[in-house]
Amino acid sequence: MIRVLGIDPGSQRTGVGVIDVADDGRCRFVHAQALVLLQADSFAERLGLLCEGLEALLDAWRPQEVAIETVFMDKSATSALKLGHARGAALATVVRRRLPVSEYAPRVIKQSLVGRGAADKPQVQHMVRLLLNLPDAKLQADAADALAVALTHAHMSATARRTGASVAALRRR
Amino acid sequence: MIRVLGIDPGSQRTGVGVIDVADDGRCRFVHAQALVLLQADSFAERLGLLCEGLEALLDAWRPQEVAIETVFMDKSATSALKLGHARGAALATVVRRRLPVSEYAPRVIKQSLVGRGAADKPQVQHMVRLLLNLPDAKLQADAADALAVALTHAHMSATARRTGASVAALRRR
Image 1 (spheres, rainbow over the protein chains, first blue to last red):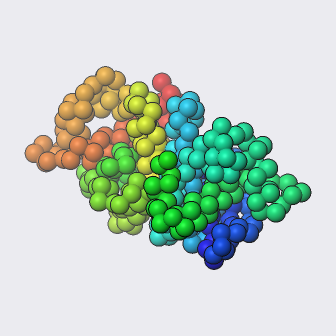
Image 2: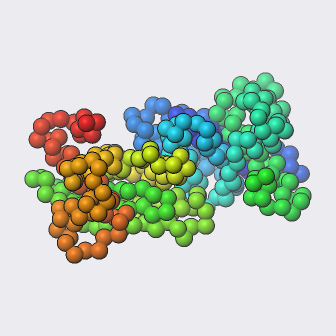
Image 3: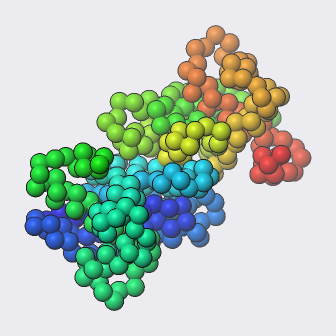
């Protein structure tokens, strides 16, 4: 069994989701939440809160692998830049714990969960609930996105194990 | 006297410069270097190296205030995004030490040191050497840029003290 932490980075809210992946590839829900960063006095302090929240989560749940969304560059330059700050702070935090990090584009996550790279958010969230057997759970949107990237990593790793391909090669498809 | 750390963030090299600012506003060179991040195996690991290098520097030199360049948005979206990651990792590191951070646009730094917002890099580096009395020192370019933002912070703080204006108000000019 491997415990995977998924991160959906954002400078206002960062979604985090933890799942356990059994050797046969089945996934079990462990924990999900949004780290809300809006109470900070400045943008820089939001990043500090993000790192502190993430470290508390790593201490509490002890994931062995981490999966994180890449930035969708169609956003405005300003929002991509803000997102880059949050993502950089998050990546630095997990890398410093010597945890392996895999990165997945939003399109790859949608393709992996729904079977269509152009799927919309409600479809992705529906599949997250279905795959983790959380039919009635109220999932905060960023937390659901974090579970989605964790599930994508579980699927990609399972496919890589079956086919002998590296996850990096699969992600490039 | 106040010890100021200037940071010129970058995902390949991050410049850092430490100066002491006397009560009369005079600045003294303390330390400058470039944290070279290229030996890392991945982009994420560069960010980890950046945070570790920065923390070692904070431990060694114990600055009381931090000044950092903002991102010049005329860069390509991809390079701005990479820079955003480095800047986010750096900001999170200093904020977590509860150090006050001031941010300055490249144009403001040039205006403050050379008197012209459109000054070129060699002019800025010349003024850094002159103001810190380092006429013959070989300064690595990123280290010089880090000293430039530290000097800008010293000038802005001195002006703010004299006029009673806040540094934030001066930066917006």
